[in-house]
Amino acid sequence: MYSFHRNWYNVNLPKDIEIHSLGEITPGNYLSRLLYYLKKIRPIMKANPHAVYYCYGLDMAFVAYLCCRQYVYEESDLVYLSIKSSFAKKLMKYIDLFIQKKSIATVFTSQGFVEYLYKIQPQNVFVLPNKLPSVYETIPRPQPVSDFDMNKLRFAFVGLLRYETTVTPFIDELMKFNSNYEFHFWGDGGEKGKAYVNKLCEKYENVQYHGPFRNPDDLPDIYSKFDINFVCYEIISDNERTAEPNKLYESLYYLKPMIVTPGTYLSRVVERKGNGFVVDCHDKKSIHKFLETLSQKMLIEKIQLISNIPVKEIIDNKNDIDKLLTYVKQNSKL
Image (tube, rainbow, N blue to C red; front, side):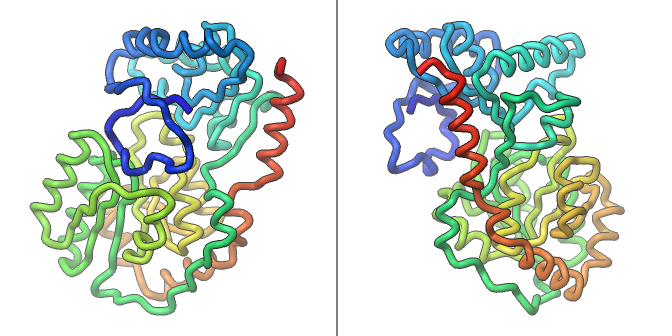
């Protein structure tokens, strides 16, 4: 496997797969990044002309197309939706749809992406949500909690350290409502994300940052240490509105109610499954109302609903993966 890195989550590199680093990338000019990708990837593709390349992200798939190679394109974010220029956004969307059309197969991690981009799902487009790996079939699922210390509830954010404009108002209101409540961070990210998290930790005694974690090894321990999972992302663009994060399936497996943002595909899923709360965390009045109405009975009811969801709906579906592999084999020139 070849990859680029950002010096984030180095602790999470797989142990059983040999990874060849092609260098470090930084957020910034996409054109210069694309040229850098071409410089690094083209020799590999030139040396392996008959391979099928599994490409994560639009830029990688675009390089494969430019190099006239067969590729499968996985898209876990519609990153161009955050571009402010309407012309640039339309251009990037056009390129994205073109790259999908030219792929052997395109894999989306959210049905919300398909609904945003297509009226009719193309034959070569597959949806494989960020479910838990099949190893979870052998891991005992936690037992439902039947009692909470309502004077010392524990909230957590697990993942890439972003979304300051939802996290900070929530924590400010949380500590004002009950200073015994706790908020925990597990994750990694850029300097900006770490800076706002450290600032909150300095401001409040009951806000703690525990650093990066290894997925899935550390998840059982992490999820045993809090009561409610904060997955209230900012709605910066349609990307956040349409995404379905892996935190959904982690929360379901570990029986943790979620807090999510209204007006998102994730909020529709949570409302349908009944496994969490939809709260506008840009608005302190909405946060206060949520905290005021939160009760032990409500939490136990949510956990009961979650525990009724079968594990087979939370982990990767082998049949779906087999369908993708069969399609790739039938439509590639191997």
